[in-house]
Amino acid sequence: MMNTTEHQLNDLGLRGMARALVLQRDNPAALQLGFEERLGMMLDAEVAERDSRRIERLLKAAKLRFGQASLEDVDFRPGRKLDRQLLMSLADCAWIQRRNNLILTGATGTGKSWLACALGNQACRAGMMIYYTTSTKLFEDLSIAMGDGSLPKLRRQLIKLELLIIDDVGIGGIDVALGPTLLEIIDLQSVNGSLLLTSQFPPDRWYDLFNDPTVADAILDRVVHRAHRLELHGESMRKLRGTATEANV
Image (cartoon, rainbow, N blue to C red; front, side, top):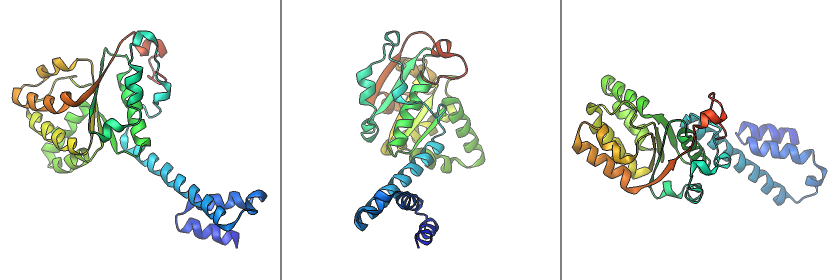
């Protein structure tokens, strides 16, 4: 009967409960527990299983450049001048719930992308929908979508996100034709969540990236004025840790 119950639980998609049942069957001490206690343990296992699968789906959909980046591995060596208190205050992802933004700046190689992915990883584990892209890829995707008629679909995908990470803002500038579309997406996405932007350039130089001052004013007003800021300093982490990855920065 135990085997039949296990198969039925798996057929119903209750894999966490099925595994917990097997563990109980193989543990004499568990078999001495009451029915409600054993059932509660199985339900706890099912909830944990579903949470784990959901996080896996969120991480897969996020497409983080550094999927293993974690806030626990952040390097706080003095030369980086990282604001530990601010960074740790961001770990609970309440800033995303408040629809605040985050801007990471610093020279190339200082770990901006890795840190952005670590924060994105944290948001996924908090059950949030996020997506990582570079500014260059985002603009390419927008250009293609505007050309083939798929812009409404792409817009829907972006504006429903709780956190949109745009890496390397300012690389290559911003095509004047994309300005209004980018403004619309940022405006709509701000209703649901937050932006995390990384850039080699400080925000006071972003205005020059736009060829349309009206669009520039509108975008910067929505992004910068409600943003936390972290500036990274020090030597290139790629030189310190090797050029293959920025893992364990």
